[in-house]
Length: 488
Image (cartoon, rainbow, N blue to C red; front, side, top):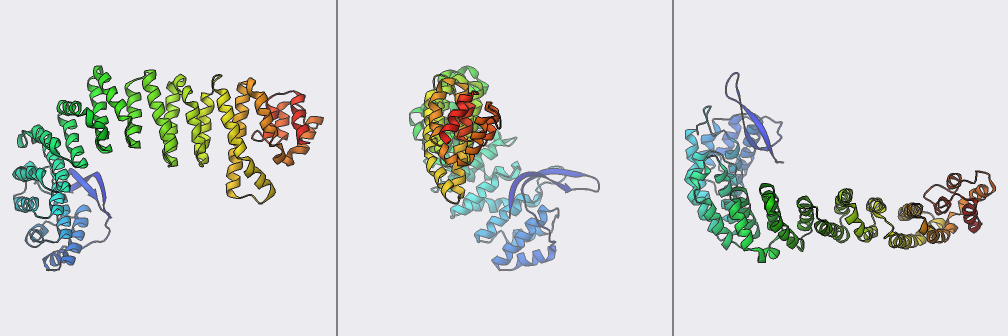
């Protein structure tokens, strides 16, 4: 398996010197191969043998061997091959071999591969063209790239989108080099023209990304000229727009206003990823209540609409962060947050309840408690079934959920005593499922374990049971007697 990564690989160039150079891939290989065997296999006419030999050569090179005598063999016997697998492995081989001497000069024999690369860039097969263009993105030697620039630019007009999108990447890679502006002096105009005529989403995204990285003013100009079409752009292009906005707001904070309007437009995107990024970008640019409320609405809609529990947990984390800084605004979204209780995941439910309890106020306590009571009612069937038969895993989960709801209702009633009366009766309706607690209730009322709220709560089965919650609403003997009387 090939693990693509950015690493640093040392190449010994003398008895006491080590030169650090770029390495674009890592391949684990612990079996030594003789250079003579690899050379013999490459010289054979069998493509399968050449494939195996090239793989061994690549792994040997990545693990520190030099194999200098192999290059001419590759040029003579591998370059002319028309097999796609051989050509793909050839590009990997050319990618990792040392192309310069100790002084940084391109090795003379490297000129032999330029004609082959030019032929690949003009190959009738689009796969060969695309792979070669992608290979050029990882070459940093200007002497090798400069003769290939006309062929790279010609591929911007190829009929196949796979070739065009890789051609744009190659143009950006060449321009990014220290002397790239000398090889592509009119790169901005070329990319702008390409962007105006291109229809493939990935190719347009690559072109716009290059404008954002190297010609930000032109990227902004293009964006402003296409605002009426932006809602129809694909998600990856809209993501790049958000990246440009964040970059421009760091450079010119005074222009945040016009970019916030663009973000508000992108909030209507059909892509959940774009909406999530929009909400985060909006919060980072503005702390105005309108912006925060719009971001909170986006997060809550994602929380409700997405079925992936991992996504829900991430969104809940963002809402938690939002609550820390903008509690007043978030309190208006309490009921939307509580809609996430419909999720079957206990982790999501627990996190939702934790967030919701921090957002409860005197204005929304009645709505919150009403919703929690409805959720408790839904658990009654599971509690009854669990008491009558052998408890299943689903029943256990429902009972755990019920315990969480009872505890949440109890906390609401303690924090807002005005709702205590309404929640006592809903708790009483479920006392029949706690028959094991009746002796403890009687003992609590008669003084066997004390008549205080804390002692009664412990005797009634813990803070999560309905009996304990009822007792917790008041410390008087009347509250304990009421609970015990109903149970009795």
